[in-house]
Length: 273
Image (cartoon, rainbow, N blue to C red):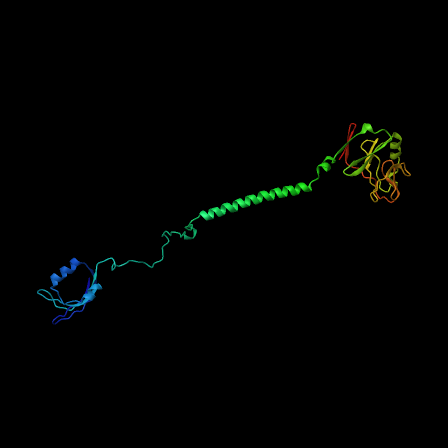
């Protein structure tokens, strides 16, 4: 409890203001030693924790003076709080604030289910896309019958000397000629400088007796007729192109010699492609 006391001296007057925490024991000792006489306080004021009253201080051995006193009860509410406004020094340890990184509280069951559904959907989509791309690329590749015709093998023993054989390779005709020695000599005697598409006979064959070439005219793609024409080779009936016994253009509108495909002769077997 807090009291404000006013003391009236008889002659000398000294005015002092004191604010101090006071316990019940100190307050009783003060009443006994100073012979304080209290006038009746108001109960309403007592309930507030601060009471103002007039106290007469007197008695033997005491000087008379007037002292207004404010006594504050010694409780936790009225204790002095210590604080500082000084900035933290360089040696002060600063504790970082991790509030932005903390996981929010709540039920994560639905969120985990969402993650699971998203992951499953992505996996299924990737599998479907893989199969779709695989089927698309498979359709772009050559069919089985085309792959089977990529290479053609021919038994050369079945072709007599001086005869032609026409086979089909990749949908196009191929001429195979088993040439005689006279035909080989005739083809080698041609002046290549006088040819429209200069090329020696040796550059067009792997073995002199076997001539292998595409059966398509280099003019407009017709199929020439064998053992015909002015040079004893092939003649194109479409526009009158003449080829010699080596398949070189000698007369007519065709600009180039008959094309030589990729082939290989292994013993008595011819492999085209």
